[in-house]
Length: 195
Ligand SMILES: Nc1ncnc2c1ncn2[C@@H]1O[C@H](COP(=O)(O)OP(=O)(O)O)[C@@H](O)[C@H]1O
Ligand SMILES: [Mg+2]
Image 1 (cartoon, helix red, strand yellow):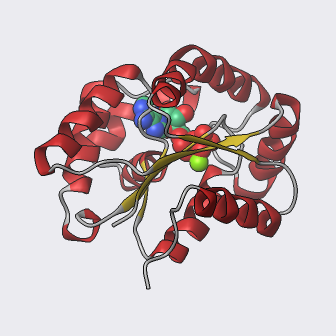
Image 2 (cartoon, protein in one colour):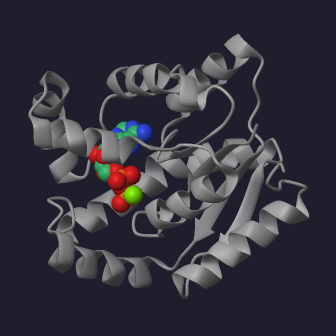
């Protein structure tokens, strides 16, 4: 019954850590970015609608994003716990998630914030671009994504910080080291794997 969010700037390593945390806790990792990219690749109706926005580094409209997440969280595997990566990213999305959870009386356990230096993350993203060729990993688009993040998503983190839910973790260093820090930081708040 663990419900977590993972937040942090583009390139902080959310997707990588999300997979490890989800595996540890036996919960699904749900990434809006991955869902959107899959739709773009499959050229679904949604994919065609959002292709331009995603490749230019803007945010998909809240109405579309909220609907996708609502549907996903109602699937059976997410009923007892989940890790959301990349959502909520706007204050409107925070309200929507509050509503979705309130409908079943569920509550978030923690918001893991990966802290990373902007220049370091740009270097990481450019490396990923050369390896995976993501359309939104050019330097210009990365800088734009960072700006959008500061403008739209910092207020999201502030809202969760006010609720006392944010757990800061240093996102720099080797994947395993960061994963160990996340595990320790959650354990320090009594969030451990149920056995
Ligand atoms: N919650 C969201 N609201 C709006 N747009 C989103 C959301 N999640 C993902 N996106 C879109 O998908 C893109 C890639 O997301 P993601 O893979 O999470 O990026 P990263 O992990 O590099 O920060 C975003 O730049 C945005 O266009
Ligand atoms: Mg990601």
